[in-house]
Image (tube, rainbow, N blue to C red; front, side):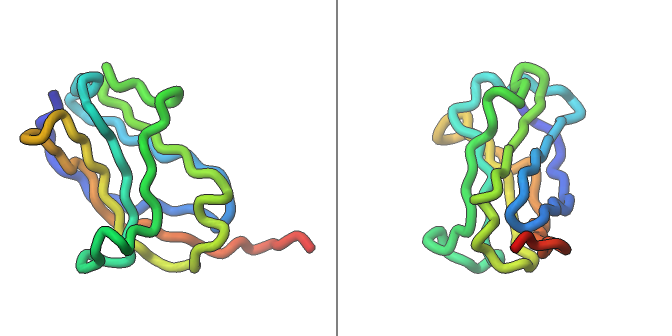
Length: 118
């Protein structure tokens, strides 16, 4: 079971692009018993749950939960209609109603694409 330190890092993506974000926990905790692993993005820390910008479950094919590796895959439609700006995110791992970890928090930054097809 995960018991490591919380980490803070910036996640960056180009608006309307595909990208994978990988979290690898140092203690290589076995996360395979987790009931839910979710990345949530909101405008700021005071935003209510009805203001969630994006909420994604981990990608089962790309992740290796037995070795503490979680991946989230973003597709173009996830960010295409969003404003290019900074948001906040966290990763929540739920094992049961009394065991919930938030091992990663930070800025989620969406940049405009430099080149647009017409």
